[in-house]
Structures are given as C-alpha cells and as structure tokens.
Image (cartoon, rainbow, N blue to C red):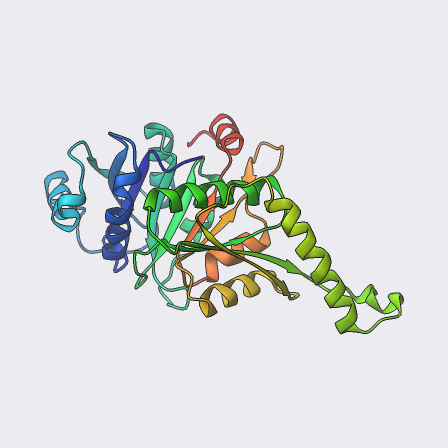
Length: 294
C-alpha cells in the first residue's frame, strides 16, 4: 500500500509543527488531489479553546506548508474526537496513509491510546511523527521477521527512498533472535548457542532479501540477540541515528482484522523516533469490510 492518498491530522498539540514539516517533505509523493488536512481533538482531554473555523484552519496550514502545498489540497475540521474521527475520515476519504503527531513517549501527557487504536484498526498505513523529530526520511530501519508483513514494510521503504532521489539513502534491516533456556540441552555455552542462532538468522535474512531490488540503496543487515525485541529495535534505531522505523503489521483471519503483535505495539508506543506501521492491501481490504466505523 502506498502513500498516494495522505491524510494529515492535526489537533493543536505541540507536535503539529513537526507533523506539518513531514507533510512538506512528503507532499510531492502524493497523487494529484490526494493530500488532505484534518483538524481533530483528542478524546478525553479538556481544552478551553474552541475548534478553529474551517477558514482559520486552512489559513494555518497554508502558512506552514508554503509553496509545498499543492493547489488541490483539501481541509476539514472534524466534529468527532480521538481515533473515531480519524477512522471515519480514512473510510470516507479512502486514505492509504495517515500522518499524526505525538509527544515524546516519556512525556506524562503523551496519549498512547489513539495511536494504538489507529495502528490496529486503520485500513491504511499509519505514520506517527514524534515531536522534535527532523523531517528526514533517508535512513530507515526495518525490523524483519521473514513474513509477508515485514516484506510490505520493505516495499514501502524502497518506494519512498526511490522517490526521494537523494544519494546515500540507507536501509538497516534488523532481525532479533532470542536464546531460549533449552540451549543447555545442546551441550554448548550460551555464547556458542547465540552465535549459531545469529549465523543461521543472517543466512535466512539473505534468502529473504534476495527477491528485492536493493540497487542504488545502501543496505546493512544486523542480527540482535535480546529477550526484549522491541527494546532492541528502539535501541538500535537511536544508536544508529535512523530517521524512521518502518514496521509491518500482523494480520489474522477474524472479525477483528489487523492487530499489531506485542513487539510492533511496543515499538510504536515507546520508540522516540517516527514510526510507520505498514499495512498490506489485503489487510486494508479486510478492515474496510469487517470493521465499519460506528
């Protein structure tokens, strides 16, 4: 699924300027007529200020976007609050990607519920931008678990980097392995068993990545060994100064459609970097059919 129809959601929070900076950076990748701006309110947060008028909201966005704003962009102030407002808009506008801002995960006022619901229920990619982040997309970390859903994250990252058309773009592929207690029965030390798992995972990584066209892009493969995989992803992304983490969602065949899985959920909730939750077209279709917004 691409970013061809992008919904940018603002709520008057301190993260809005960062969201608009990322909107400026990605506006040229959106299809004609596909860039749409929405104002919404967080559910359950008291705000003494009224919603802006349609004209005031449009004027604010136009001022911030400048000449990066296409002439066919649209603007809407939503009456609903929280994730419901965003989900209704995704369905009504057939958005392929939504962009929303958040405070740093360590902020006491950070509201995680909206992002968790969106990532699980939205029939679209969900791009959560963290306050203070710089709008660069050249260095991407992708956790890889050798499934279809990590593959869709790779496809989106490759499309994005090739659209950017800048030198020295990079993807860091990461796979995490966990050493179970049963290693003792193999008659080897913890380190020996871990190194065997690491070598096997690297071979599997090479097989998994072989079908992808990685030409023109700097790539690196990293195997981490940790019993806390989401923390391993976050630590590596921060240490290597990556611009964004792209995580493929996981799906299941049930009326609940797509869910994240604990690792992806924890990355979304706790990573201080921007996170893009990537959905397959099949996941999006299933969510649209099975989870109408009430």
